Image (cartoon, rainbow, N blue to C red):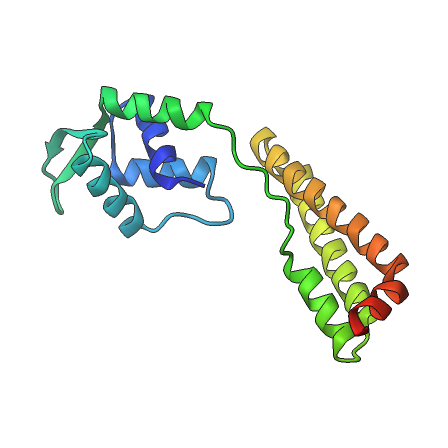
Length: 174
C-alpha cells in the first residue's frame, strides 16, 4: 500500500492535522497495521517538500504547534494518476511455500507433512477471518473477502501439490 498516496487521498476530503490523518488512516485501512506517528509526519514532510501538500494553518495548543495540511493541485493530480494505474497482479511464481516444499523433498524430509501443516495454518486463518468478517462493517468484510479468496487459492494449490507430490519428488531428486 502506498502510504503517501493514501494520506494524499484523505487530504483530498479536506485539510487535516497529522493526528487526524493517522486516526482516519487507522480507522479505514489500518485495522491490522496501524500507522506510527513518526511515519505520518515523515511522509507529510516528504509530501510537503515535493509540493504535493502545503501547510494550511498552524495552531498553538497545550503542546507543540499543530500543522494542518492541505493537498495541492499537484497532489490531486498525483492521486488521480495513482488511482488510474492498475496494480500489478502478483503471480507468486517465486512462492516461499513452493521453495520449502522442493527443499523438503530434496533433503528427504516429509513433503506431505509440510503441506498438511500449511493447510492447517491456512484453515485456522480462514476461520479467524470469517469470524472477523461476520462482526465487521462492509469495509472489513471486503478486506476479509480479499484475504479469504487468496487463501482459498492457496488451499487449491496445496491440494494440487499433494496430488503431484510423488512425481515432484522424483523430478526434484533426479
